[in-house]
Length: 376
Image (tube, rainbow, N blue to C red; front, side, top):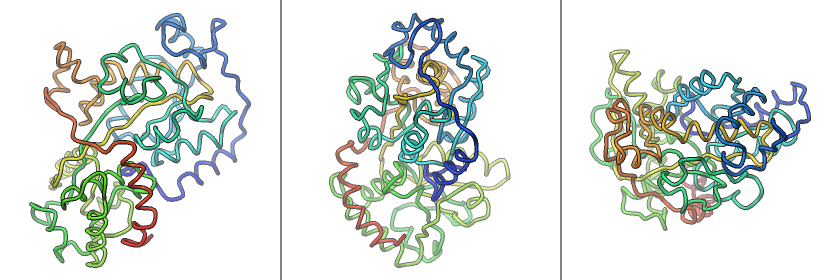
């Protein structure tokens, strides 16, 4: 189970698998005499019907780092396959945003390279303008929250947002304030969803704790100092949380995305157990979709964005607890689905989030401060 979009050694495993399987050189030219690797919107490729036909001729979509429980991607992937009848190759579901790019670069020129990415803002901005992403604007581009301001050229597109939280076993009582985490009863129990040096969720978890103890997005030193207190008390552990670590009780307290923890709450309830959440400070987390500039299946890559960033995809994200960037428009136009409204509400407001520059600056500081505070 991917809680962090990062797993130690996962890229090495993915590449080992890739090396063991013969790969083929590919061409990005697609059906009907059009090169879909160059189109920047569906109209330029002959419209949606032509895009669908081209994808079906390619017959496959390569995705990476999309665990099925994360933002309801399991239903999203199944829906795409059933709708268009194409195969989906899923690689390294527990990978981080950085590992997605690393894998694409390593496999560039083969038919196994990822077609699309699902990445945090810091990584999206880091690689924008480096010819890593193929600019593409979906038909709903003008209705997506912050799309134009995030990437005017369409190199990446904000797809869904969430709010950070702390998920924990109800057997531990009730957490009412951040300082409760220093209680001896939490010894060896607190885990952060990912290394903040490579994981967007891990970094945002640091931002949340930092804000809760009086820090700002421009200075995360107070948050790091708090994590050091947790480590010194023996409460913080350098363990990446997974379904098995939660089920076994190894990581009964997890700092993570709210929409992921909402799923844990439901799973625990099915087993007659209690999993609670506590949000000490409101910090948002936005992920972004992008098409690989060397996608082996360029039509399917662009169709995937149309699907996930359209109304169908918005519903899937919403019932999974994530807020799609199309949501404000759907609610305004009274097109928001009832089950989505039941899950995230009508007037969902995005929590304050760090900018790309603030995230980059925080990582520079954390490069030395984080290991010094909590170890490896």
